[in-house]
Structures are given as structure tokens and as C-alpha cells.
Image: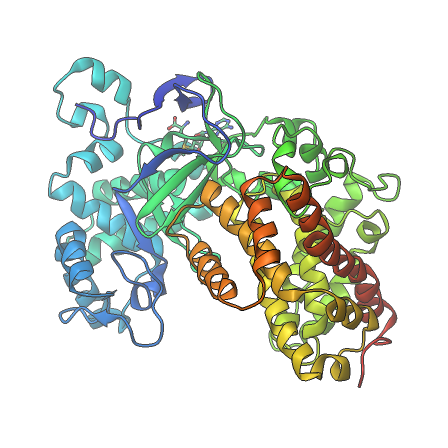
Length: 560
Ligand SMILES: C[S@@+](CC[C@H](N)C(=O)[O-])C[C@H]1O[C@@H](n2cnc3c(N)ncnc32)[C@H](O)[C@@H]1O
């Protein structure tokens, strides 16, 4: 019996790049390949033990999580979460947290130490999946020899690779020793080595369960998900909802094709991606790496460009022929800009505008080449916009910048329009429009906003209608690429419901609804283009000039 069999629609195989996961049927972009809802490890990052439900992994809000009475460390939403976690692992871990408090006066453990402790307890209690995953098939129950052959050996550990990084290997030794001691056992050279090997397996096979909303990381390890190899042009992506990882197709996947994921941010430069992959001990030979393709080149070749017909960037020819000037900046220069950008030290308490100005200056070759989607320009603009959104003085500029990010940058970086990150960018525009709408109504906008163009567009545009169109877009795409329980989808649905109760909007609402039901519907499409897309595009067109003015030439446009 295989305790972690391949999910339906896939099979395990092996080849020159180790064991892999292969599709046994076709998958459309956005469709769910598999859900992994029984991970061997699913835990928040170290300090997150006291701020995130340790079972369902929901990030708490002030005081809504209760700590375990015994260890006073692990927190939970309610008794159901606490009981479920107790049964899974906390019955063993609870004593560990008590020991940590007594010996180190702390109520959390470093993430890898906690992860290895959990694995050690699962192995000790005879958990068949953990034994199969960490020790190998021959140690698991052998009901059927064929199954065991398919199941293969234990999770890849890359031990020799880690040993060739003496500092990492030593860190693993320290963490392994601490884990064994916190379990209440006496470390011996053999048990420390075994725990070091488990750390290597965790490092090689666990996913960083990153939650972009809370900015919190964590660990998620499922043996079947861990079969998936890396590509910098992956055909699938994974999204986390509580204790479940959902694997979806990014590109159309054909029966017999290998399923791939990216272990790092695909938008980073080649050297940065390769550096991140050194911890996985292989050389990536995907086309993005071997031909050193940038995001525009990957987008140009993408088979999913046509899906953008129903998006904020429906100009497919622009995605196929991006309006960039490659003669201005070489790929080597881009690498060097990225390197300097990451090495620039920024004062922690410094003015975010000073940081943005420094970064903007560094990115000038990319700006001149109109290579807005090439890092580090998007990261520069994203963090600037985070600051602008919450700033009384700068908030007006946030709307054009959000429109620019959603129309001129995000579609090149994530070509499928249902990608959650892209949809979040559209929701950001809705939130800013709502704010601007209230400022327009009170006359504040005209008084405070120094940019006449923004004031003019918002005076003419129907903000409610734009929001309605954008929300319908988000809802339709999120249903393809994210799923019902995504909080952004819930927000969009609730807000749309509110907008629909506003009186006197039936005609406009009907046209937008028609367009969402059928984006090729003639009148609906024309209406969406003139009433939603056009103002968004005009607002976006102000962004380069505003950025240049505010970050480059000084504060010309800003009222003092
Ligand atoms: C999460 S595991 C993936 C499953 C793995 N192939 C196995 O046999 O267990 C990650 C490891 O797979 C290998 N791997 C992943 N992607 C690869 C790629 N594109 N080329 C070569 N090896 C790769 C590396 O050894 C890496 O450390």
C-alpha cells in the first residue's frame, strides 16, 4: 500500500531529473489538478505559533486566538481546532513548548527546529505516511510490492549537497541537536545525524506556505506535492488555503506531460533565481534559464495570451509585441541593477520617499527602455504604492499607479488573468476608487489633489460603474483561478452586492452583467471598453509622468 499515492489525474514517474509527477489527463489553465489536504507538516513560521491558529493556520486578529492551557504557547481559533491539532501532533509537542519556556524563556521555536521535532514524534508513534516519506518504502507496510516500487524511496534529501555547504550543514547539526534535546531525549551522534537528514528532506521538499496578505510564512510538506520538479516557466502553481494546498494548471497541460512548479520567484533575474536554487542542488535548464529569457520574452511565447481577452489588458498584440526598447539596456546591465538594488542598505526608520527616489534613480535605464515589468522596477513601484495608499499626502497618486501596475506590468509578469496576484491588483483599484469617490463627493479631491488630470477623469467617470465592472472581472477570474473560499473573492462578491442595491443603475448594471456573462457580447463589450477600460487606461497613462515628477525632478506637482 502506498500511503501517499499520486492524486487522481497524475502518476509518479522517474527520469534523469529524479522522480516526477506526470499528468494522466489534460488540464485547462486554472483547473484544479489536485488538492492536498492532509499534509505531514503544516505549521506557521516560528513566532507565528503565538499569533496564528496552529491547526487551521488562520492569522489571528487582536486577541481572537486562545492559547493552549498547558504550554501557553500554541494558539487556536476554537476548541475544534485545538482538539484536531492535539490529536495530530500537539499531544507530543505541548511538553516541548513547556521545556522551551523553562530553558530558554521563550514561547516559540525556530521553524525548522519545530518541523523536525514534529517529524521525530510522528516517526516515534509509527505514523505510516511519515515513515514512508522520511525513511522510505522498505520501512513502510508492504502490502503490495508493485505499490512499493511506485512509491519509491524516501523523500530526496540531497545530504551530500548540503554537506558541501559546511555552514549550512553545521546549522543543521545545531538545529538537530536542539530538536532532540527539546523532545526530552539524549542526543547521540547517530540520532543527530538522522535528524540532520530529516532537516535536509524538509529543506528540499517543504513549501514555504507564504500568505501575501499577512506577510507570514510557514511550512507545508506533502509527499505527493513534493514529487513536483522545478521550472522557471512552470505549467502549474500552488495556492494555500488553511491546511490545504491547491495545485492548479497555469498553462494547458497535456496527458503525459510533466507537471512543474517554481521553487522561487520566476520574476527575479537569472542569477538570483539560480542562487535561490542552490539550496536544491541542481542546475535549472529550463528555457528561461538556458536562453536567459526575461519576463517580456516569456510572455511573448506564452500560449495563454488569448485568455487576456477578458482582462484589464485585452490588447493581445501588446502582449505579443511589448512596446519595449531593448537597445537601451542589456541583460548584463539589468543583472547589475538588480544586484545594486538588493545590496542598497536602507535605513529602517527612513522616509519611504527617499528610499523610492534612490531606487528610481537606479532603475532609470529600465524606465528609459520602458521595461516596466523587469525587476527591480516592479518591486520599487509596488512598495512605493503601498506607502502612497496609506499616506494622506500621496494617496491621490496611488490610483494611477495601481492602474499602471494592473495594466502595464502585472499582465507581463503573470500572463494568466486569473492569477491571484493580478486579481489583487484589480481589487486595489476598486478600493482606491471607492476612496476617491467619497473625496469627489465632498469636494475634497479638487481641493487636495494637485494633478488636474486625475481630478478631471474622476469628475467625468462613473466610479461606481468602474468598480462594478472591475468586481465582475475579479469574480469571474477568481472563480477560475482561486476558488470560493478565497477572501478576496468574498470581498468582491459582498461589495458587488452592495453596489447592486444602489438605486437608478439598472441600465448600466445590466450592460456590465451582460459583458461579464459573455465578454464578446457586442454592446456589453463596447460599454465595458468605454466606461471601465478607458478611464483605467487614462489614469494609468498619468503614472510615468507622476513618477518622473515626484521621484525624479523633485516635487513639482505636489501641493505643499
Ligand atoms: C521537491 S524535490 C522534487 C522531487 C524529486 N525529483 C525527487 O526525486 O524526489 C526537489 C529536488 O528534485 C530535484 N529537481 C527538482 N527540479 C529539478 C530540475 N528542474 N532539474 C533537476 N533536478 C530537479 C532536485 O534534486 C531537488 O532538490
